[in-house]
Each structure stands twice: as C-alpha cells, then as structure tokens.
Image 1 (cartoon, rainbow, N blue to C red):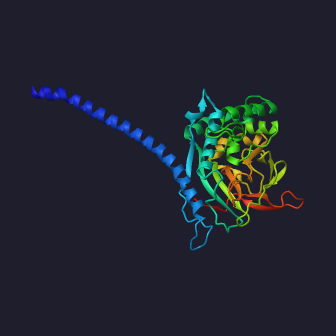
Image 2 (image 1 turned 135 degrees about the vertical axis):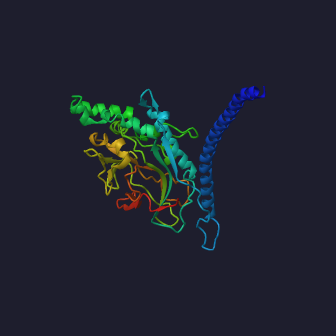
Image 3 (image 1 turned 90 degrees about the horizontal axis):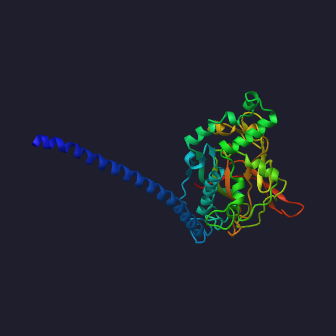
Length: 366
C-alpha cells in the first residue's frame, strides 16, 4: 500500500514542483520588467537632479571662486531601441508610431537636462568651448533590421529598372513610395506638427523654444521619404563664446551658410550624391558605411533631395541667464562630433557680422 501510495503521490508532487517553479519564473520576469522601467525612469530623474545641483552649485563660493560647478553629473548614456513589434503593422511601418518614439526620446532628453533653463556644464569664465551631454543612441532591433533588409529589392532603383522594366522616373517614384512603407523615415516633419503630452507646444517648440519657420512644399516632400539612420545620437550642446554673456545669434533662417551646407527653414540640408553609398559633400563628412549601410545605402544615393539636420539655435537657452547657443541635436552616425558649424557670434544684424566655425562638441561631459 505504501509503495502504491508513494507511487501515486509522486506525480502530484512533481506537478506541485513544476507549478511552483513556473510561478517563480513568471514572477521573476515580472519583477525584472518592473525593475527595468523603474531604473529607466530613475536614470532620467537622477540625471535631472544632478543637473539642477550642478547648475545651482555654481552660485556658491568655493576655493576656486564663484561660477564653477562642484556637483557631479549623474547622466549615463542610454541606448534607445526601436522594435519591429511596436511600429510594423500589416507588413508596413507605421511612421507616426516610429516618429513619436523618436520625438519622445528627444523630449525626454531635453527634460532631463533642464529644458534650457540652466547651465550645468561650464564655468562662468569659460569661452570658446562647446559642451555636450550625450543622451541616447537610437538603434533598431534585429527583427526591424531584417524586415527592412528583406525589402532591399523594393528599395533598389536599379533593380526596379533592370528587373521590373520600370522607367527611371517610375522607379524613382516607386522607391519613394516604398521607403515610406519599408523604412523608418526622418522625424523632422512629425516634430513640427505634433505635440508631446506634457506641453501645448509642438515638439519643435518645446525642444527649441520657438515654433518652426515655414518650409516649402518641396522640402516637406523631400523630408517625407528621407530615411532615419540607425545609430543616430541624441545629445545636448551649449557653446559659450564669451565669459558670462548672452550676445550670440545664429545665422538667420533662409539661405544661410552652415558648415558648408545650406540652412533652409531651420533645417540643414546637405545634398545627397549618386552611387550606392550615402556621401555627404560637406567639409569632412564621410561615406556612410558599416552596419547602417544595409538600411540606407541601397536607397538614398539615387533619390536626390537633402539630408536634414537640426540647426543650432539661439532660443533654446534663452531662459538661462549667461548660457550660450545650442540645444538638442540628433546626429547621424557618419557625422563626427567634431564637425564644424559656421555660426554668427557678433554683430549679426549689422552689415559686418562676425562668424566662427564651431564644432558640435569640443568637450563631452558624460
């Protein structure tokens, strides 16, 4: 009887053990997920708190004098991933969902560093330095990369002409249509037209402290099929031209020279050139290659149009006494942080403006 009873109890005991282990595993996953969310939110608030402390500490006298931050920044660099499951619907990319995630990542970074109301970076005596705080690098998950790569033929103008019999004009039109379906496109139009939940301003207004200037329909069309490049970095920069001064102005919107490229409607437009790779013909910009090449090299070189970057502005830090020019930036991986911008720094509204070539970053604080 004992043997029979023992035999009959063994499966029940095994079932209990399996249930307990399964419950523990599920609970572990839940706790890990919650911890990840809390940690992410904690990183943002910890950074913001350290930014405030550093900015305020400069008002305190120290052995080195006033105007020097004595609090350390606690702002680790983060990785932001776009997941296929979040943005691909019915075999096509939902651009609004992709753009919102990118725009929210930029807005979170701007909130984290104090929204342009404080300067945690520099000494008041600093000049001719461009400080940078790197927030996030935006990447695609493997499934999204494979999804985009699987549509290489749909995004290849030469293939459409030679294999599908399309004319040059038809192939160009088709590639533009397919980019909007099978690639993540730039967020530049989205930030002009949509607002974050916490603000009644557009994303652009929140990030740059001014509403975007008008751009032509042609520019809007070009931006609508401009690919977003994975590996792009969100960072905040601030350039101090003179010690404790607010006298800087950026080259005006319109047809202004900006690091060898053209500023149009608050955007920097660098021409796309032909060929299989993306080559930006501006002062030292390099050929777009490596892993991101599988995303963009197969399309960008044949489309014409322009590569849009955010221009440095003088409004972003307007609420910060003594701060410089700068603000939020989103830079593709093939543009070095040492890339220079040509910016007006004195007498900008006169007939004899003074310009200076300023790198995106000369000192990285994290």
